[in-house]
Image (cartoon, rainbow, N blue to C red; front, side):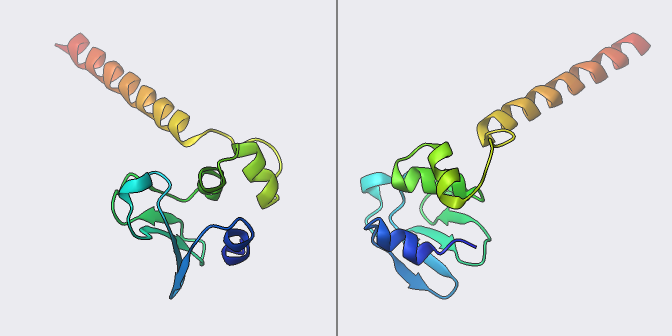
Length: 115
């Protein structure tokens, strides 16, 4: 489990603790985040912004890379994770969409062939 308090303190990132979450300024909202709207679960349940639902995820690599402005490889090293990720989130979505589109096309061809 990641010691977020030590990591944030060591990197001079302001935070506040509340129950089982740690809150920081949302890196993706930037200056629009006047509070600390990005919650990080200390129980490993992911992270998310209260202002923008698109600023959510479960990849601590992605979060750490954004917070510290480092590469994914550097974030993996800090977290003690070896090797490359199987697929980045965006690439996975793209591939899933392509598979769904191909499946729709195949079903459409089957329906047209039967008509």
